[in-house]
Image (cartoon, helix red, strand yellow):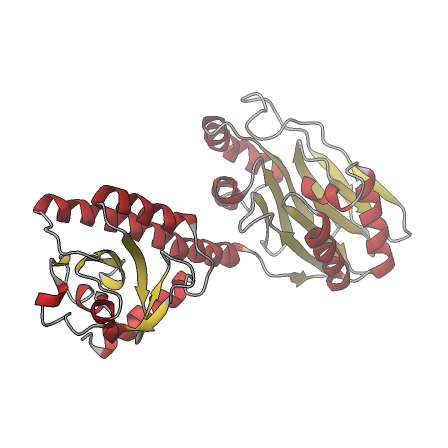
Length: 386
C-alpha cells in the first residue's frame, strides 16, 4: 500500500481538484466514452483516490455506487506503479480473484493506468473493464497511456483553476487610507475570472489609481488584463501620460495580435493639493462627485488601447478633489446595474451620496451586480476626507 506521506499528499491534491461529489462532467465523460469505443469494452472509468476511498467520476450505469473502499478496488494495484496494470483474467490472478468486482459483478478483465499530478503523486486512475477475459497488446497499453495523459490534463484543469483564482486574489489590491485619501473597490466577475483590472499604489506624494476593462470575459481577458497591470506598474512613479506613452506600444501589440482592445482610466492624485491628472483611453465611465452633491461625468476623448493610432499623443484630463469630494470609476459592466445608459453613473453617484460610506456603497454595488449584471462589474471609489 501507499506510505502515509504519499496517501496524505494524494488526499490533499484530490481535495484541491474539487471533483469528489461533483455532478458528472463532460470533460471526463468524453474520455471514457471514447475509451469504450477504442478498446471495445463495456466499462471505463476515471477515478480519484483519497486516504481510503476510491471515487468514480464517471459512473457507467444509473445508480452505480460512486465511492467505496480502496481495498475493494482493482485500482489499488494501479496506483502503486508507473506502468499500466493489466489483468487479462481476474479469476486467475490471486490479487483480484476475491475482489467484489469479480465475485459480485463478474468483472473478468481489467486494465488501468495511474493518473499523476505535478510532483509525480498518483491521484487516480483511468481504467477499462470487461465481463470476459481478453488479451491486451503492447499497442493497447501505449494507447491506454495516451488516454491517461488526456485524463490527467482534464483533472489538472481543477488545480489550474484554483491556482488562477489564487493569483487573481493575490493581485487584488486591499483598500488604502493614506494622507486624507481613501480608495477601495468591488469587482464581480461574470464567471470565475474577469478582464477588468483595478490597481493602485502610492509613492508618498501621489496616489496612482487604475481601472482597465479588456474586451471579453474569463481567462483570455484576465491574462491580457494582468499584462496591462504589469506594464503600468513598471511606470507607477511617472505622470499618467508618460506611463501610458511608455507602456502602450507593447500593450497595443499584444491586444492587436489577439484581436482585443482595452479601455483604461489611469490617474494620479497629489496628496497635498488634491490635483488629479488622468489619461482616459476610451473609458469615459468616471463621475466626479463634489462634497455639495453636484456631480459631473468625466468624458473620454481618446480611443482604447489597441485601437489608438500608434505614436499619437493622449489627452490629459485634469480636475481637483477638494475635501469631501469623491471620484467614482466603473467598468462598462456596471451599466447593467441601471438602464444600460450613462445615466446609470448618475444613479450610482446618488447612491454614494446617500451612504457616504465606502463599505456600504460597495456592498450595494456587489449585491446589484450579482442580481443583474451580465458582464464583469468593477467599481473603484476614491474619496478625500472632508
